[in-house]
Image 1: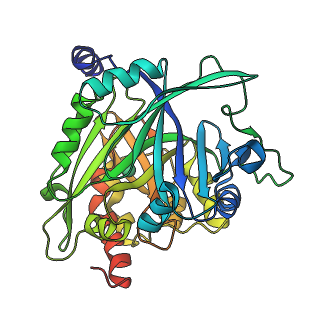
Image 2 (image 1 turned 30 degrees about the vertical axis):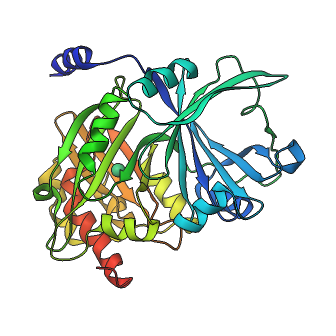
Image 3 (image 1 turned 120 degrees about the vertical axis):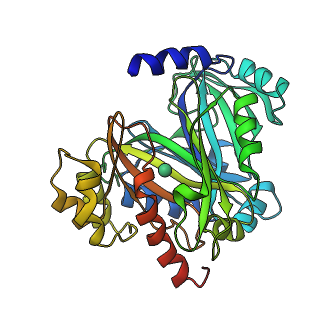
Length: 375
Ligand code: FE2
């Protein structure tokens, strides 16, 4: 089984855009100082780097925070009337950049733009005493962009323009490790065009598809295709709304985000029970799963290493595929608009995305949507 997949992967793998993983995720936020405090306190990030007027950046401030291989950049504008301020006015706080680590940012730009990628930033070399970082970028869905980051010749703390940010306030880690996948919500009939974009422009392939029959509840529905790069380090599921009795959760997102954008960032942990317990203690709220879910879950997924009791207590979901199982949980939205949320995921062999949980999960989402009057 594994051999077959590997051979198939080799055959279909295209290497014009070799990716080494997610370099960072940048959020445009209304108040980066407070956002940095929130992500440090609630999620256990550490201060890493800072850029602002003191470092020569006159129009914006960015805080860089890190936990293991997970790096977030929180950016806010200092004045009105610029693309960052306009982005926040239109979308609220949200993900602007999914930055991907590459060996060569110039070649990444050339290979993607020649295949139809729309330029966001031509290859640009940033230098300081610690070396150089080359950055380029292309547009993806909505106002979201992919930056290609080449940092092999850089030894500094983050990148030129930033200084080290040291603080006495350093909350302990919650065990978050790295970005497992980032999900985009796109408009009606836009899933396949964006699947094509990831295939043709970035050399990704479609590894899983879900149609509205797989994942509709009584009321609302969506369709989803999962795109992966060749080595599987970068995975982007793409959702579009589907017709249901009531408004799809994707439609609610599109209404409040004012367009297409990142729906959730899934973050890996090696001990989901410890991570979620800590996150809940620090005030992070997750979707509530009815106790009936746990009455039948083991019949569906079979034997698991964990005790069921703490999973039920915390609301952690379980699913299995051919290769193993996974444990996952979904936060409530991280801002007042019902837009971006996080997933916490622990994979125990499974490479899939929790299809067996969609019904329970979407019913939980719909209860929240209904409480907001948007169902
Ligand atoms: Fe996910």
